[in-house]
Amino acid sequence: MVAQVREGLFFSTPAVLPRGRHGLPRERVLAAQRERLMAAITALMADVGYENVRVGDVARTAGVSRAAFYECFTDKEACAFAAYDRFVEVIVQRISAALDLSKDAGHYVTMLLEGYLGTLEDDPVVGRAFQIEIDSVGAIARRRRRDALSSVAEVIRQHHEQLSAGDSTLHVLPVAAYRGLVYGVRQIASDELDEHQQPDLRALIPGITCWVLASFRGRIAEPA
Image (cartoon, rainbow, N blue to C red; front, side, top):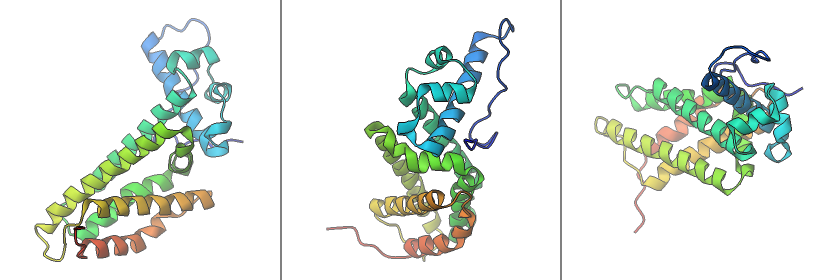
């Protein structure tokens, strides 16, 4: 049986719409079908991998017809990209909600990791789909993933500069260093999701916090 995404975190899946005349506006019907289809392709990607997912499987899992699928998405790739965009949007929202730049750097890093790792732990099915399987969608997906990680690294760089203004122990790093931190944390999370059905990602936060703080307080010279 395919493990389902957690209801209400990344996706809020409406009940299957009644057959026949129901009087619902067409826009509402399509929005409900899109939501169910995005949740379905996410669950299937996590279970069998993107390459093994068929449009018919997605439609059946979502409880809609193939015709309804093609009313919502041009193809399987478009559905996967829409679901991935939702994943990135929610991760960014959860990270942003956890941050408080009025506190010290240790608190900032801990809350940053809670927003990221904690959210993945709360829905490991979505985590596996979009931390592990997304690269197999193709070159466009890999570019989207790189763009998303680079954006997060830039936000952390800006926050680090703000924090360093009030803490002489913090030193601004080269841009590549922030990207390295983001990529490193992502890979650690991906490995845990790959190896464990119910990974304890929050247990990683103290150790990773020490590593990130050591980097924030280090002096890394810009290359000549």
